[in-house]
Amino acid sequence: MTVLRFQLLGAIEASADGTPLALGGPKQKALLAMLLLADQHSVSIDQPTDAVWGDDPPLGATATLRVLVSNPRRILRPGEPDGIRFDGHGYSLRCAHELDVIEFDQMCRRAALANRRRCYSPRTRLMMSLAMPPGTSW
Image (cartoon, rainbow, N blue to C red; front, side, top):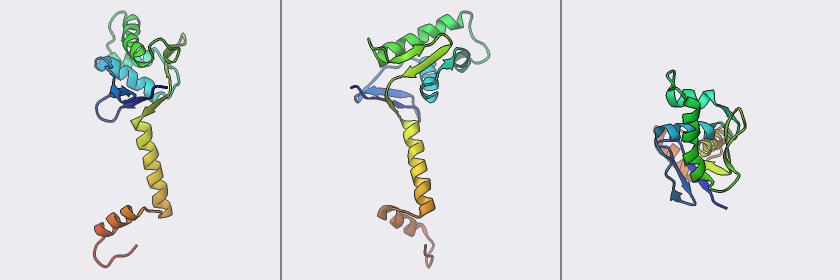
């Protein structure tokens, strides 16, 4: 099974099994980011239209949106039923993937829990000790 990995922190990028994917231009990347952050829930057509064009969408924005979706759809899951779907009301990204934003959030939660429990790794204890003023203990 192909492992899709998405990076939203910093430049928006994607890879399949470590091979970079060409996601298209800024509008396609904005649309993809919105679908990724929706976490497999449907995003109404109005939301990506607003995200891509703001308060001034072009005439025929819905048709243009279909074109913008076609490139990521083709790249992410060529010939497979999973990928970007339209359910009559909006789009959703329905495929297994890794997302740096989720991984970052999980690391922050683990760090916060470790901090509350004062459960630090030896390396963390050393770094904290080096940062403390002389004569301070924890």
